[in-house]
Length: 113
Image (cartoon, rainbow, N blue to C red):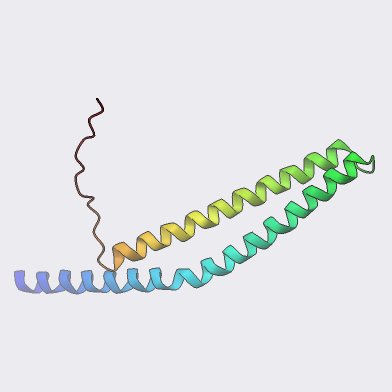
């Protein structure tokens, strides 16, 4: 009876490991497309912001239009940062899933004199 439980737990652990590896390996392609899209949006919003600034300087745009362009640029920058974070988190998950260590070596304290 105890042996059957141990075998079932072992099989469950193996299935979980395969699922985690499959999930980690499937994410990079999706994140790559998301990264490209966020970079394209960032490029477009940067151009929009720059052009709106020029229009404002020449009296062809209002400050509200300029503020809206800046808000959109900041939102695009934030989306790019979040996408980059997701890429890095996926790399960490893949490293852990494929057997990477999770314990950092102890560092000696630095003494400043």
